[in-house]
Image (cartoon, rainbow, N blue to C red; front, side, top):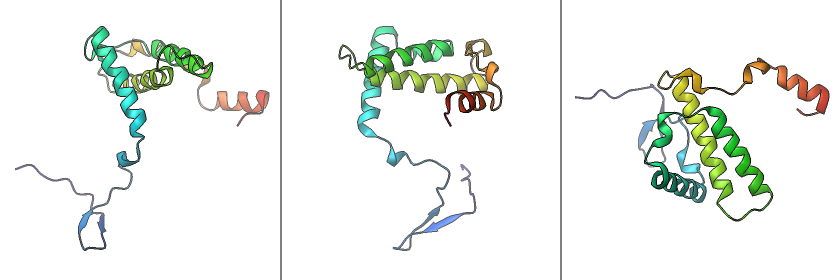
Length: 135
């Protein structure tokens, strides 16, 4: 028999039903369905072009970042030749997923090639605030 996890926290609904509290677990019901479907179409097209789950084999994080930025710029410039915003989002999601896989040891650390070691701590925040007036 599978053991059921229990946080000890409960919510009781008006009708009397009781359920474990969902605080801090995320609220997928609040996600933007149109955007998710558009990004899933980008994933499907990538699976057709490169093979299903090809990206999960590991790519340098900079490739996702560069591609996301290019697509964002093209979206900003109103290019209509591709779904640039959806492609930007797909690349950012893949970057985040790949970064997590690297941190979990599922992918090699060499794939994390974004030079963010130059901005340890709040160095970048201070630089932007002091020199650009950005907070």
